[in-house]
Amino acid sequence: MLEPQFVRATSIEGAIAALSRAPSDSIAVAGGTVVGSLINQGLIAPAILVDLSRIRSLREIEITSDGELRIGALVTHREMLCSPAVASAAPLLKEIASEISCPRLRNRGTIGGSLCTIGGQGDPATGLIALRASLHLRGPNGARIVALEDFYKDAFAVDLGDGELVEFVSVPAVHAGAGFAFHKLGPRKAMDWTQITASVVLTADGNGAISDICAGMNGVAATPSRPRKTEAALRGWSTGTNWATAAAALNGEIDPPGDLVYSARFKRQLAAVALKRSVEQALVRAAGKAAL
Image (cartoon, rainbow, N blue to C red):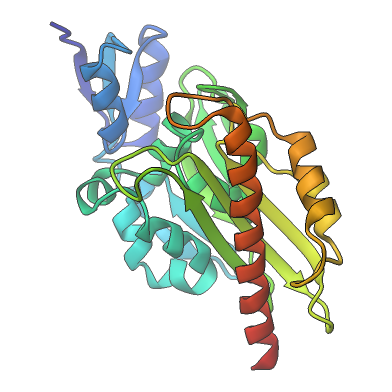
């Protein structure tokens, strides 16, 4: 039976020091929902678990003077769902949080844990990519900032060095007239891994056509991704016009893995459906703001 050493950190500095001294297979624990499951399944066997739950500074949510939203790594999905700051600055994240798994896991799971351990299957990564978010990391060599879309290197591989932690996520101020939407497809809405997820943040011109767009998707490659060629194809697109060009662009830059639930071919079809629904809903919301 696995009996890892348990270290409870009370500061970021203490956590970094503990991880820096620990063997390479040691793991930082936030809410524990994923790490506990992986240990139970025998997929990981860490020598040391460094508990971050007592670090109060990682639980803060704030909006800075320039409108940037900052979300501490230990903020839970439930806290995201209930936060007035998140609802005001980035309502897309509130919408995503409302559809994460079930209340038990929303109460324990954290944004930092989701991004670091299940980014490839978790929903928040797509919304944060669409919002052009960055991760603020801190480790033995100091602090650094990484755009979330560049954080994922391969399946289960992220740009996190030895002893490094995610301190907080920053989301730049969103254009007042922007529309947003999130859509996911899978066998079940809760208590199951999402198969395909699409998040979109866009602005529209006076004719209702897309003038700027940023999208995040999951399930279409080994990691969460931003389909930039598809974004380019969608600029100038409006509801009711031909979707074929955008669908072709998306099909050309995704590579979904097949699994026991859906084939790779079917996932390509689902990806186009999820993105189109997100884009159409985001345009409706953008039009509603323009009419105010």
